[in-house]
Length: 124
Image 1 (cartoon, rainbow, N blue to C red):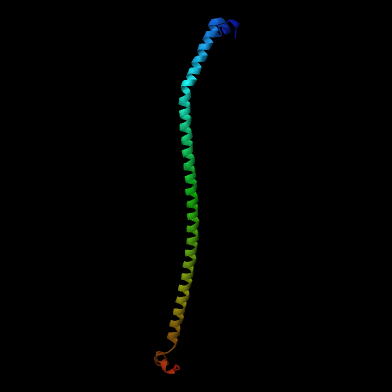
Image 2: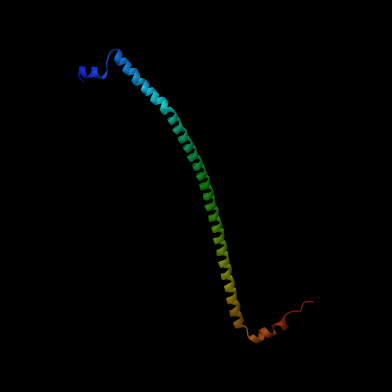
């Protein structure tokens, strides 16, 4: 940059000093004027951040509760499945016993069944 352009940008002497002071005071006034707005905005942002933190904690707690509920539901469903399997097994056993009883009753003559009570020992 040529020397003559640089001198225009930075005037020397008393006028240049006054101009620099005025500009500096304007900047300070702007800073002083903006300072309450900035501090107010900072307060708003801090409050919003705190609100977000609280929401995050609440969501974390809800997640933990939901995960526990899922675990409980899984364990209950596993127990129910075991119970259902046991009932099915019991039903199969009962069906097999019924089938055997029918087969035996078909083999034994009907007359024997009618008079079987005669052959039974009498309890005293």
